Length: 88
Image (cartoon, rainbow, N blue to C red):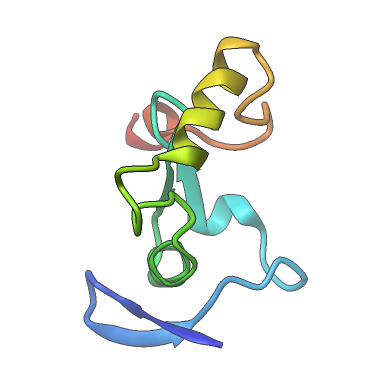
């Protein structure tokens, strides 16, 4: 499967967890509610699979659920990079 990377304006393969590490392509936003693609593969995967549930902004279900998980200390996984780590 493939998707469109909005930054490079190219069509690229989607992320495959069997062949790539999650942290190579994605980071969590500082608030832990959104997945941010940091490579063409990551960006196209976020967009194509709507990983942040932006296709229906009035529902906001996945980001709302993630905010509860963050408050409970269950999310994001400690091994996953966050935006603040990526930008430093």
